[in-house]
Image (cartoon, rainbow, N blue to C red):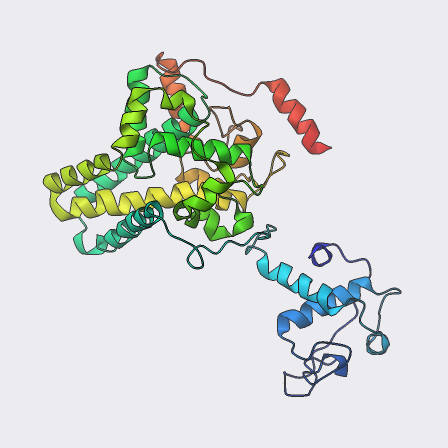
Length: 388
């Protein structure tokens, strides 16, 4: 795999195409070495990917450079079949349009035991997606604006400002009445109670992209995006229980919300139905919840696969501008992993960060205090380490 990604040492020879694949005939016009018939020098079954991988690996390992067809015809294979198989499988495991390779693929939907929490979590996620399918049939502008408003309430104030920056990283302090209000908004996002959500996220930073990370794309893009949510035994085996959130567990409010968690989104659904009937339920619960689900999940998946790394953080975190636009600034994920305590993720003036703007407003009116930001010295030190 590394060979496939490395720069060429020698100029590649001209390799003209000659024919299509036919039984016991050459795949391309190079030699009988690449025919589909039996050959003592090469595996008997070739597909296009195998052939391309073999050719690239062979040409990059030949010395002196192969400059003509005769030289290629007369040269024996430079790599064994096992080396070739490993290279091909490495390319197949590479996540599309990324340099991230799935090294620990995780099978979630078979060959495992599903517990009651996995089934209930999967059932809720499936129900929200199915409810969203009714959206075109019951569209009205009031229902749409209800969804947009709840997107801001649960996504901006609930998940990003409260669950993430305030509770998980303690990037700033709020009066308790306001802290609890924002945390309750996060409960209505239907992503779990604050204690469990914060615990998982703290484990993610502690074990980022290692074998103990709860949701690393090294176990598959879709595992990091969603399927880890209903593989709780597997996550618990690696991370343990929520024993890293004592600061929340000692507060009666968070214990109460944890024990009564599911009742609160159900109460919101009942209120929406009472106010606007089925359209409000579909748009305010189904569409809005599904939308906020995937935006949150993209931070775990896409922001560890696609984007740029401004800082050397020894993990896969990336700055992803389009995720940042959708997630109120959470997409500047490499910045966040570099300075995880920072209340501001969009460190550059052009990096839009709606959550930071809201925190800054709360600070201006005296509600947000002890707001943490990286100092210029800290940024310069990490920039120097990154450059080296």
